[in-house]
Image (cartoon, rainbow, N blue to C red; front, side, top):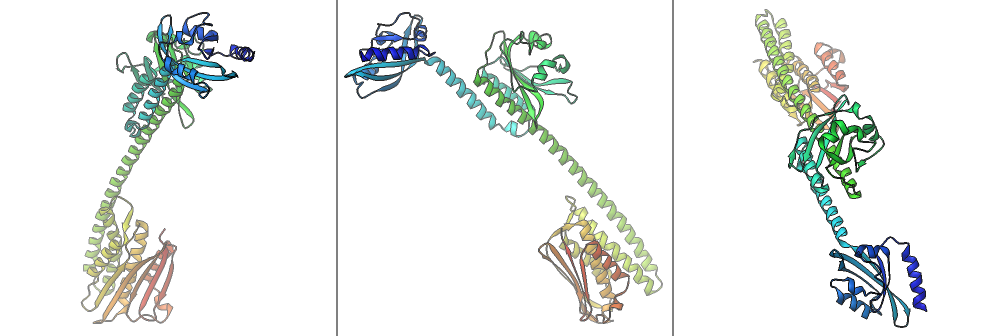
Length: 499
């Protein structure tokens, strides 16, 4: 009685299930079989037969399960099933219920494993394709057409379709242009003309709301039939799966999976793969655009460097001519006063000339080495201020750093004026003396100090003069601080921000 009650309950339960189910006893005799199982086996009224009658082999494992049913309540195994057309691989899951002392019922579920295996292989193929594309150097290096070829070829094999192609809108958004059309029948890319957008308004409007367009019969679908005359019928396309390409939230084109001559129902795995393939194409397009932008920027920088070098060379030439003309005037001066005035001008021009000579040597940027610049400037001062009646040493101690050219010009003019003042006023004839130029970095600040061991000054009014005014002007240009101490020799200290 217990067996009949449980059997009745199980029959009611499985009658509403859309699965291939069977109930049999410990001897293997079938007590009930679902309609789907009879359909799967291609047989009718199999109740009363033995479960073993429908198996090609694997008797031993099922027989052992039924014999040892007291301890083994569940088994999952692969079997070969018989049907009218032959045999096929299936998966059988069995679960046992105790209905009385030493009496059991077995509920079994059978699935056509060939479909499962096909799905498994299909998923594996798509997964491996995605993994390979994610590592593609062609996509990463911005080689657009090589990357598109790779994506379309691999996608056609992964999905198993006749054609896969990618399209991009032109700048006016009036046409959509094919950037690659891979045909598996030929195993290569084939040409495809651009299409006018205005002839397909419904199709393109759908992309504003849908992530994907599916059409098992594209020529009769209300969404895609407007492509018949210009595209579908001429190319024999029956089914299509189209996914929009997006970049920064905007639609830039579409990737199309197309089946020719036969209907194709697109699986969920097909759709998921198509979405990833669309992302790969979008990534290839974006990477290509970034590479082009980088190349244009590099070309512009090279042009800027060439112009900078040419400009600096012209400035250097002009300053050399100016210096030569000033030196001619120095030689023509009839008294020491005017000669010294002209020499001051020569040295001021020389301080700017030294900077542009460095810029010409270092055309890669607008920054220069400050210690190189100061040392070059000091050497020029040594040569131009070589008076036999004054035995002076000009010493430097400069921290290594790079500064903007505009900052270097101000520093150079300050050094030029301070050194000129010391040469002129700090020492008498036949007097030994030292002039020092020190620069050090203290965090974000620079400290420039020009000092001598000369006679110094006792009152601030003695500091008046064009040289000091020029120094004050340059310090103001630097937004720095100026400190002048003339009590023990002359010391000019300038502090300013290096940023």
